[in-house]
Image (tube, rainbow, N blue to C red):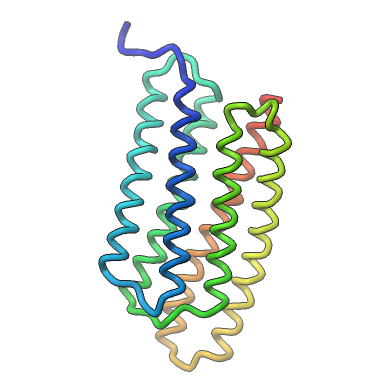
Amino acid sequence: MFGFSAKGDKFYDLFIESAQIVHKTTQKLEKLVCQNYVSDLEAEEMRDLEHEADKITHTIVDRLNTTLITPLDREDIYTLAQNLDDIVDLSHGAVEKMALYHTKKPSIGAQEIVRTIVEATKNILQAFCCLNNMHSKKTEILSATEEIYRLESIGDTLYRQEVAKMFEQEKDAIEIIKWKEILEHLENTLDQCEEIADLLKGVVLKYD
């Protein structure tokens, strides 16, 4: 009646799909950051992943509007979905700027930051895979969130070190401007991972 569904279990499956795209996107980001340059085709592949993530987010929002009973608070579902999508957007943004700016090969420090992001998204995926059984999998989810916090802290340190090193060693002012913007994108990606960890931890404690 009125096009509404009474059950909301599908949300957990959609969250896993979204988290899988997030992890796949950051793995692609890692591959590209280890190259000498990013081609337009590779940037387009990242854009395709962004579109996939957008579709899943839109599906979650549409389902929120047509489901009477949701497994989590509607606000929690909406915020988790948007924050997952934001990680993909930020990852795509970093690659897009690398292609647009025709940057030199990324530094070892930039590559280390991206590897930290990949590890963080791996833990995000693990946490979302446990969310449907959050009562029995509480320890696993909280362990994943703590690991994300640890990785975010490492990423912050790497970011500060890389910016300082760049200003000390890079002689090309234009290259500094390019990479400072890209590094900020990468740091924001890690911050977004931390935001999801906060949200997941809050959800688990709320429904404990």
